Image (cartoon, rainbow, N blue to C red):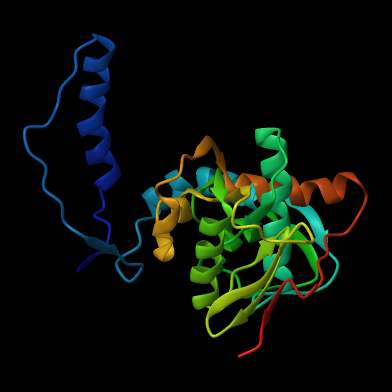
Amino acid sequence: MKEISLPKNLFLSLFLAVAPCSLMSGCNKYYQPHTLQYQQLSVSDQGKKDTAIASMLKPYADQVNREMSKVIGEIAVPLEKKLPECTLGNLMADAMKSEAEKVYGKKVDAAFINYGGIRTNQVPAGKLTLNMVFEMMPFDNQLVLQELPGFIFQQFLDSVANRGGWPGSGVQYVISKRKASQVMVGGIPLDPAKTYVVANSDYVVNGGDNCTMLKQYPQENRGFLVRDGLIAYFSAFTSRGEKISAQLENRVKNVD
């Protein structure tokens, strides 16, 4: 990878390159490049500072920082990311299930957050800002529903158990010999012949993290981001005058 510092007139050069294209677009003409070449570059802060560019960007940076510093709630107790069960995971999975039911207007039996997708190890008690939610879930994954036969749901849970267990809402299971056992959905033992409505991210239902068993089943996707669901769910606590909290509930137990 090549490392560069931003050239002094980079933005001016880009502007001069883009402006004619914009003017031409206004004439309803469309131009396409004949060829494309890619080069991976690493932008470093070690080069000479360009005060003119910094000054030009400052109003936009200030606006973004103000938006990202907006407080949307208050965390009652520190939330942690751990396996096989964690308070942060339980909270996020509950948000997935609750917001999925609102967005899709139907009962959702279970919802999951893939453990690797949670990018924060701990959220301290106190004010929760938008920036902290983006740190929690920086990916633009979409909240997707599927109707899964019970035996496929079991295969999915076995895959999840093999990875140490994922946070889930509406479901309880025990990890034994890297498989999911004693699975309860809504407090009732999982029925291999029954169909379940399950919420996941589009990354997972498209086979991410070895969940290939889900790819063959239809998806209901309205383009609603998981992160937007988290923001809505956390903000609802504030609207009710409550602090955001979660507990360990033995949703996932590892007996190995």
